[in-house]
Picture 1 (cartoon, rainbow, N blue to C red):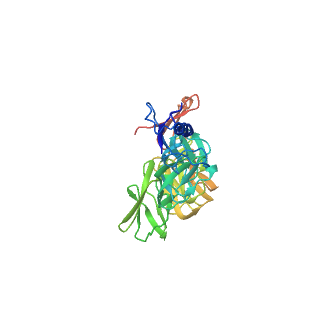
Picture 2: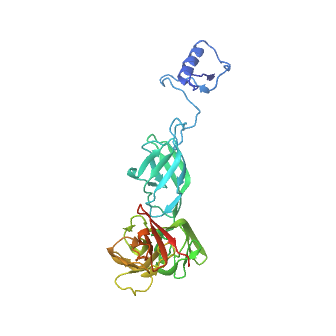
Amino acid sequence: MAVTLCFRDHGGGARPRAATTFAAALFALGIAALGTLTGCATANTITPIDAGEGDSAVSDAPPPSRDAPRDGPSSSSPVLLAVRPDHGPFNGGSNVVLRGSNFTEGLSVRFGGSLVQPRYVSLMDRNRLVVERTPEGNPGPVDVTIERDDGYRSRLANGYTYDSFYADPNDGSIAGGTRITLRGRSTNWTAGTTVMVDASPCTELTLVSPSEIQCTVAPHPQGTVPITVTTGAESSTVADAFTYRETGDSNYGGFSGGPIRGSINVSVYNQLTGGAIPLAFVYTGENPLVAPPRSGITNMAGQATLSAPDLRGPVTITAVAKCFASSTFVSIDGRDATIFLIPWLDRVPGVVDHGLFLTECQELLIETKNGDVKHLRREA
């Protein structure tokens, strides 16, 4: 015969051992049943225990979930809410931030079934966890899971998507002309495949294999844009696939940006004013008659990109502009080169003491007492 009892401790939980002891006392007194106790919050059904089984209770509570600790989630349990950015190349290596709450040191991270190496996981604060290098994965969405040492897990379903292709390099000059290589996985590109970088065709397309294409991007304003690859009726788009940027360093000059792999971005500036020099002629090598795309003309921002499939560093770069002394970088291997040109200046007779200079380019330069130089366009 069972007696239904209900007890509350100070923490609000059931006390099965006390219930068992009290039930045994009731049976000893010959009491068959006990009515419901007023104010009771948790009920356990107590069954008389055979001799030799020990003092224990049977609860109808469900077993704990694999994705929660034995006591269930609490207000202090970590919760994963988002991954930013939420996509990246299939070959991994991306830097992403996991957002949520109650993050702590020592959390492990998985993308699908792939564990992120602990050395690539760092706690920024209780709401952000940084993954410096995502693992490799097959194209498509995967769950992202964080796990605590005690086995508690928080899983974000389809929290990250592996893109089917990526661009290398994934950035270039606003002047256009950057030679990029698209590398895909599980793609079937053909000679008829087309590539669009934002709304502009990627030209001079070369099919290397069903999973590799090379092409040259068009000029575009600064910003990040998608790339769309179309083969027949099938199209695949990767958002944020390529970034157009200002490649020059008008403060220091020189070269940077990693080794040259098919393209070099050249920016040309006036050494006196720091302003961009449009219509400057730049070329690679020793021959100024070399044909484009190994030579080019700078745009209004003073930038030009020289490209060729076999262009590799080290290279020699020369910039020439009207009314400026030419300048040459010899044997450089940096995909971003900034060249300063010195203008030719002629003193204006009769006004030398006032610091006025007149150039053949019909530009007026005013040299101030503190050494700053202001640049004004002379009216026709």
